Length: 441
Image: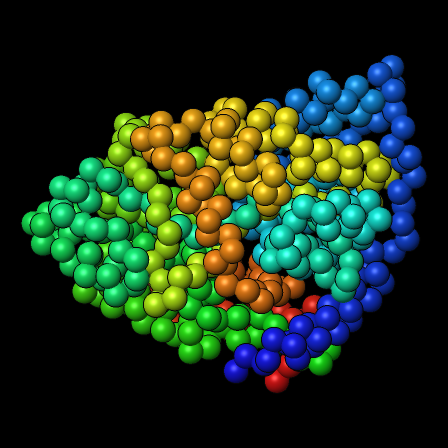
C-alpha cells in the first residue's frame, strides 16, 4: 500500500540521506582542481559523452561561443549494455569523461555506485531556478544535486491521421475507448491493420503506464527502500494489455526491431505509444509518411493523467578535475536558447526542455511539417502538469530493467506479462540488499 504523501516524503528523505552517506564513503575525496578560468590561447579542455541526437551540434555551438572552454564530444551507444556500461567502466578505471548524459531512472543507480560528483555547489542553484519540482526531485538525492535536468518525457499517443480517418476512428481519450477503437480498426481494415504496435518488451513504457495508473514501484519507509512493482495498479495495466494482445487487437513486436519498423512502414500498425522525445525518431524512421502523423494526450483511466518515460540530465563524473568548466557547459546546455536551437536544428531531436522558457525556442526550431504543422510542443507541454506525482526511481533500476526485459520478451505472443513484474520485484529486492542498502519488508 502507498503511505500518505507526508509520511512518504519524510521516509524517502531519510532513505536518501542514508544513501548519500553511503555514496560519500564510496566517492572518496573531492579531486576537482579546476577554477574554470581558461583563455582563448589556452582553453580548459573537457570531455562529454552522449548518445542523444543533436548533442554534437550543440557542443560545436558551445565551443564557438566559449573560447575559454573546449568540449570534446564523443558519441556512445544508448542503453544499459551500451553507453551506461561504458560510462561505468570508464569511471571505475579512472578515465571517465567530465560530463555524461543520463536518463532519470539511471541517476540513483550511478549515485549509489559512487560514479557521480555531488554537484550541489556547481549546479544546485541553477537547477532550483529552472526545473519543475517533479523533475528536480529526480536528480536530487539526500538533499544533494547530482545532475541538471535537460528534458522531460510525458507519455503521449502518436497516430496516423489519414488511417484514423479512413477507418472512422476518433482519437481515444480513455483506455476503454482505446480498446473499442482497436476493435474497429481490425474490422474496418478487414484484418490488415491493428491500432497499435505495443512494444511490450520495453520496461520504460510499462513504468510510464503503471505510473499513470497510480503505481509507485519504489519508495521508502524509515531509512529503507521499498519495492512495490507487483502492486494492484500495475496488475491492472498488465491485465489490460494482456487482453489486447490475446484478443489480437494490437501487435506486440520487440521495440525498435526491424519487424516493428516494418509494421508501421507497411501501415499494419497505425499508432504508437511514445513520449515527447519520440516525435523526432518517428520523423526520422518513417520519412515517407510525412504529413500523416499527429500527437495526442495518452488515453487515461478516467481522470486525465500520464506517466513519464525517459527524459535526460547532464551529470559530472566523480573524478572530474574540471568541474567548474563542466558546470558552465551544463548550465549553458540546459538553460540557453542557443543550445536548444543548435541541438534541434538537425531535426532529429524533439526533446521537451525541462526549462519552460526554452520551449518556445524548441518549437520554433523543430520542423513540424512531418506532423502537418501541428504544435507538438504544445501537446507535450500541456501534459507535463499531468504527470503522476511522487514517482521515485530506485538505486537498482538499471539491473532490474535487464531482468524484466528478458521476461517481457517471452510474452511477445502470449501476452502473459505478469511473470516479468514478479521477476522484477525479486530482482530489485535482491539488488538493493546486494548494494548494501536497507530493504523495507
